[in-house]
Image 1 (tube, rainbow, N blue to C red):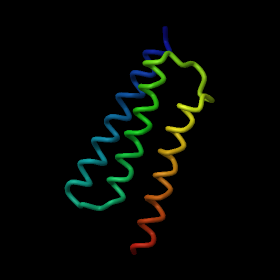
Image 2 (spheres, one colour):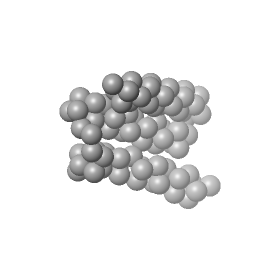
Image 3 (tube, rainbow, N blue to C red):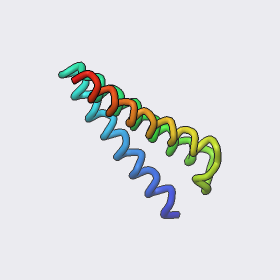
Image 4 (cartoon, rainbow, N blue to C red):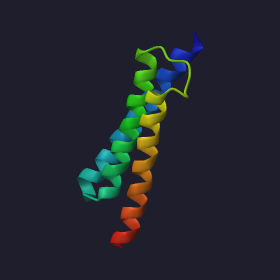
Length: 85
């Protein structure tokens, strides 16, 4: 009973974070903000997949793969930002 409520709260927080980064990307056109927005969108999608498929395990390939892609994108964004400057 508590898990779907907390997952919904996490989805709302992730959506807020995505909107925050999109807002800053639109004002600065810095790719770092765009990469972060896409990465947090992937984390939101991962959470929605877990809710829709009623998955309780985080070690399934679908869940782990989406999360790995999001964290990899964050790493690429940081490397890209440091190389451009």
